[in-house]
Image (cartoon, rainbow, N blue to C red; front, side, top):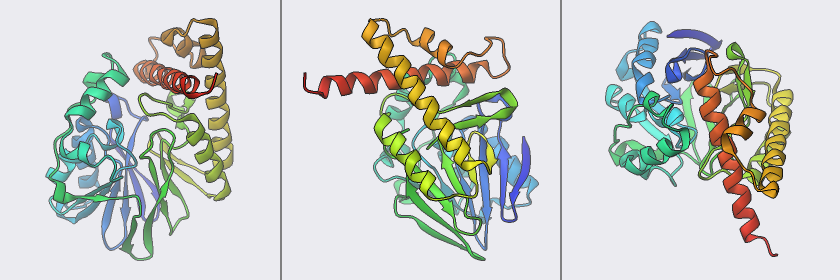
Length: 301
């Protein structure tokens, strides 16, 4: 576990997502009240709580837990954190809030998406009482001391995906709305996962984000980045590259997920973040294949 300062009022806790440092963080945002942005998985919660201890933040002081979307590396720890942080309310898009109350279907879906190699690294969601969950899509959360978090719809990666603008810094907690930047492991790529990925919406979101002239983005995977336009442009390029790769494979009648993933994101099998590269690239290929097949089926012949 590592804690590092992001801004005068923001810290990041590296909770060693999937058992690897440099892959995922939970952000701590402090005004008069304290909010967490992103939860990691159930298995990262002990590290997140240790990070709060290192920051001398009592469990009772955390009032808000914000999730960008329903995928388990972003909300999978929400139930365990809610149990450990008794005064905290959990915020997520209302269209998926039911999966935090009863996570059975979500866990089955995630297991199919990430594959059997990565699934044991996620843990199990703990259900949250419905009264502790609030809709996040219109969130305007005033934490005091001029610290305000506002939700922005950023669909594509998933239809429920939200990002949170920090009005004090101007930065955006971007979740998976564009690409991932895990520089420690040489991994910089967008994730386009099954089952609800939407290519058109994703590219529109990235175009919209570029118009905001953001000074900084706070990535869940991983950390703060100031070269915003470059990273947004690169994510769009990589998405287009993967879409073209998949479209050509479908036309040739040979959409082999593992082979396409290895071509799009080559990474040594014995590399330190190999499980991340394999799992997330394969589910990205599968997501584009599913999207493209549905698009072709719905298009007039």
